[in-house]
Length: 174
Image 1 (cartoon, one colour):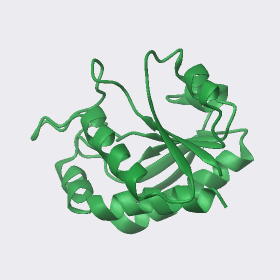
Image 2: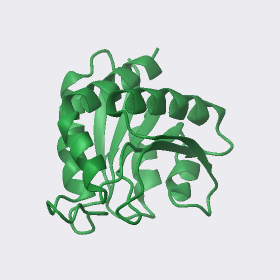
Image 3: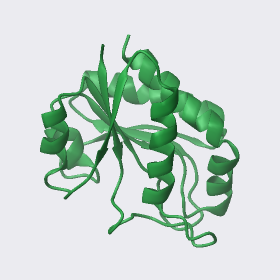
């Protein structure tokens, strides 16, 4: 049976971006989301991974030995930017394929602007994780948490979002 590392972006002490209207952080949203995703996936071993430090995260994941990795995040910029995107390592063909599938599934259920898949090098945001994990890895940014409309869309469609992640994980394991 294939193994998926489901990385909860950020950590409690450094929770990432926040929705100012609700006070919900990227870590809080994705921690609970990961638990729910894990509960509906079948036929794949899903292991939640939490970050100790940014530098140690790739080796912590590699120790688990997953077949593929999905890191859960939410985008943030200026409160107005909107949409869904998935990041992958620019030299990873499998990562690109994973990003395309996941982005298609996330964009379909949220109905936000499809920002597409984005190649990243080691110097780019998220590049360290994408380069130094042994298995193909993607970073999901389904919506902008600092945009109230995006955040509301993510919350309103939470069950569909969970299902989009779960079905993507099951498809990627085939």
